[in-house]
Image 1 (cartoon, rainbow, N blue to C red):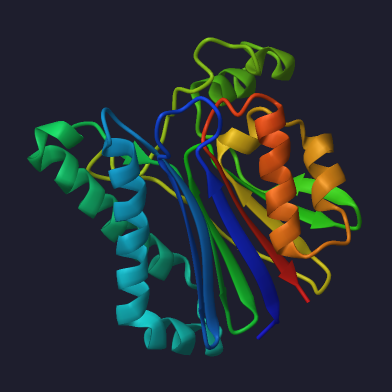
Image 2 (cartoon, rainbow, N blue to C red):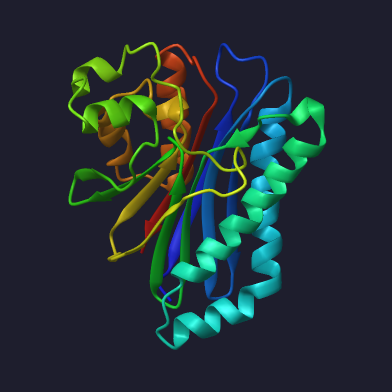
Length: 250
């Protein structure tokens, strides 16, 4: 099992009245999980959705931890296990939104890393992001599930037009908004010396990747790095909730 050091932080920002972001850090024996979630919905439904999704994941892991560790030790793929876990979280949020009018239409992004028995898996839905920092290069590991991302992929707009597009916040996929959700699930090759960054769009939506790299690439502890990144996002106006988890592979 690779040794990991991690820190997480969430900040309301300077504009929003409440914080709909949540993060999760679980370090249990040979299984560790890190996640960020950015909720959406009317009133307080966004924070309900993000909290509910992470609670469901924690509950699943508490119940199936030994099975997951055993599968990984035997070299089995964890894709199906992760899809089952995320489907359980999706069902919980979707059911709550269907049964309570005040939660109608709520949902959340989710970007998650699972480390177990020297394996690492990434699971993702929505427009929160995962980055890999290796040899002073910042590599985006996730694809934004947004309307503008789809427009870029189809050649209808350019990358440069994304930042100011009026529909840039419209998600094409989210956890809890539909009865079934499609997640991106893939294994990652992680090496000692790597640094992994999970963040909501309160960071990457307002801070350029070269600026993120300039801060995240410093030889500092994860606690210091996440604090510096939140400070930078707030310096840019703090227009959204900001949530970051940073993991060092040591």
